[in-house]
Amino acid sequence: MKAMKIALAAAAATVALSGAAMADELKLSYNIGVTSDYVFRGVSQTQEDPAVQGGVDATYGIGYAGVWASNVDFGTNDPSAEIDFYAGVRPTVGDTSLDLGVLYYSYTKDKGAPGAYSYFEVKAAASRSIGPATVGLAAYYSPEYSTDLGKALYYEVNGAIPVMDKLTVSAALGHQEFDKSTGDYATWNIGATYAVTDKLGLDLRYHDTDEHGLGKIYGSRFVVSLKAAF
Image (cartoon, rainbow, N blue to C red; front, top):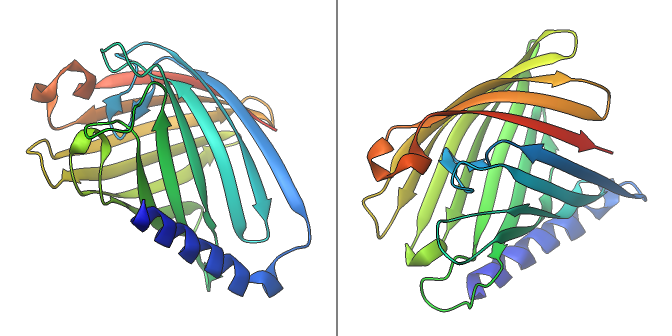
């Protein structure tokens, strides 16, 4: 909790220092979607079953905050839902867009004792355009990861490129590391998103990891998702 307070304070300070550059307008956006399988960093969070998801985001200048939720199934009696809270800033340095923030992943029926599911991360990401493509790097650090796995670090490289009107191909390659576990693994995904309308997107994506021996939820899979943003 102490580390979380420090991260939140740092994000708040950055927002305050950037106040002169912020637009004097609070903007809200909403999203809702369905997916054939909720996959997070290559691993199914729903035992390969569908999920219903949605969230709300607020932006003010370069600052942002939001909440997002999904059903989950870890193969036990609990939890049954995930609710994420996040905040940060998205400044621009030259041609590079940055994203610096903090995220808290909370789960229903989580008692908060050692071995609990809920945890938080700090995030640092950067992206820039190269011709028609966008490429990026991101890193997420947790001082105490879910289910008492200790420190954890996830980092990835990603990219996206429009290939025709309304169709964009994107991919990512990442690696998850744990301090108290031998379950480190690499993960990757590639897929295409089609803009059905200016508010509705259809995504078909292939996910995989290099650790199928950790269980079926680490296996390769195709996922279809439909998401509306407004």
